[in-house]
Amino acid sequence: QVKVVESGGGLVQAGDSLRLSCAASGRTLTTFSVAWFRQAPGEERDYVASVSWNGGDTYYEPPLKGRFTISRDNANNTVFLQMNRLEPEDTAVYYCAVSMAGHTGRGQFEYDYWGPGTQVTVSS
Image 1 (cartoon, rainbow, N blue to C red):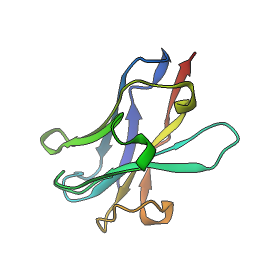
Image 2 (cartoon, rainbow, N blue to C red):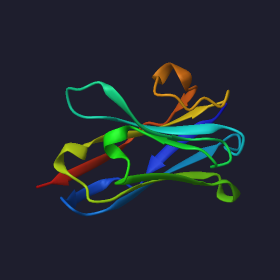
Image 3 (cartoon, rainbow, N blue to C red):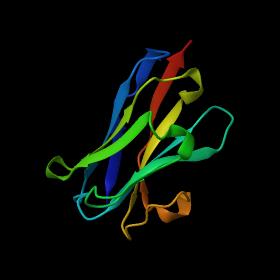
């Protein structure tokens, strides 16, 4: 069993940056791939980015590439999502998801464990 928890969300202004963290307990994240998803009010949960188990491969929802960066620190069992030049449209609950099989795709079904989410609110 892997317990996943996100942190780092908050209320910021447009143009600001935030770094979200995803930490795990119960098992190490070092052999699992990890993704970030987000869900805006009244919308479906959407894929944001994913990273392979060793950090060697990263993938992004195309419109977010260049503003968002996913990375991992396996020594500290943590995955990050650096978000720059935030826009009001980035307002959402951000979720971290873990794939034990090493999947890095866009489908929610590919991920086995999810955190409760962290709220990001960007004011204009």
